[in-house]
Length: 370
Image (cartoon, rainbow, N blue to C red; front, side, top):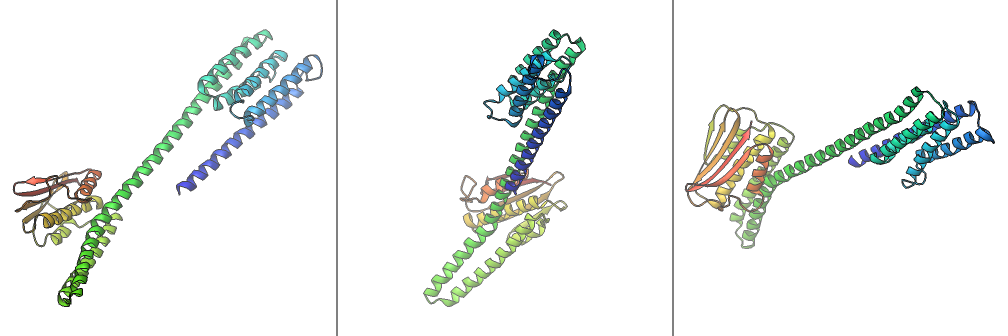
């Protein structure tokens, strides 16, 4: 999709550039035809020859700077020649259309040259054009109008370039935001894969390996018990996977009911009136309780555990506290992505996650807005 969008954008830009070139060449044709019909007319001698030379040179420079013939290196020279042709035609035929060549040069200079260089060329061109009108005896109004038109074109060109630069910056910012959203979604999916599949599959693999070892020793009855346990683990894994997919789709998470199921062998307390939470908030709290209980069983088997879910006016707080033998490592983070992923999940959802020693056990404290 991103590649298709880039191709469409490139095609659109090319079409706009072609349209501007065509418009510029049409203006050149109209101005040239008008100058050929005006008096004195171009010819092969005297003032007519000067007009013919000025029109020919100016038109060639106009075409070169419009089509960017010769590349960026020759672009400034074409602009200078076109502007000079406008000044020469103004001297040769005051009151005619010769100054339009200078205006065209300023327009293209503002679009293709660095702003400082375009401003210098416009200033010099405005002074020369005003001097040409003054030498030719044009009224003051004409001098002011033509010189002011060049400065106005410089101002409009500057505004257009700033607008285009802002649009490009906004587009770049939108792309960066889209990438950040995509990365955040990838991280979210990675956490779900860890929380669901890593636990289920690792436990299932261990049970099946144990069953295989028992079968090799002709202990079929014990192996059958292990296989039955592996089946329950697989079913539980499927249930957790469906729950995770549902949460990823944005479906509300029935948090109190899930915590009651999760804490069937330990204590659970619900404080406050339960209310519907966002899928992200509910899943983050559920995964926190799940990981905390897993760590208790892993690092402090046999210790008593209390899980408390408190609905407060501005947030929801979950605490998991165990009492008994030493709990998880002093860092509060078990190896892998367990508690680390929970802390990331809570922070991304605007909450806080704390885990550490508490008395003779371990405390996990999660607070989420909701």
